[in-house]
Amino acid sequence: MYERIRNLREDKDLNQSEVAQILNISQSTYSRYENGNLDVPTEVLISLSKFYKVTVDYILGLTE
Image 1 (spheres, rainbow, N blue to C red):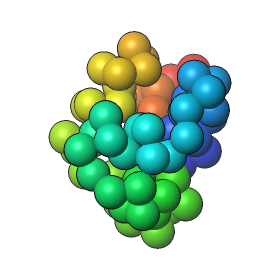
Image 2: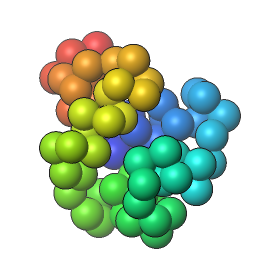
Image 3: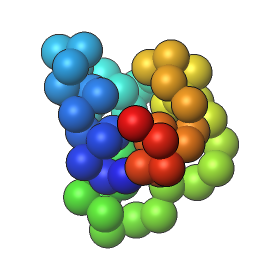
């Protein structure tokens, strides 16, 4: 999952600060999500899936 959210961000040519701002969280919190040091809350997963136009299942690695 962590690699997928990083890849999605990089595919959109965004930096961590930009995505954190969209999610209304700090860059350091977002960085911990991407590095797997902090579990991604459900509401953040939903926000990411809507922003990137993918399913939560994709982000979680359940589908391709």
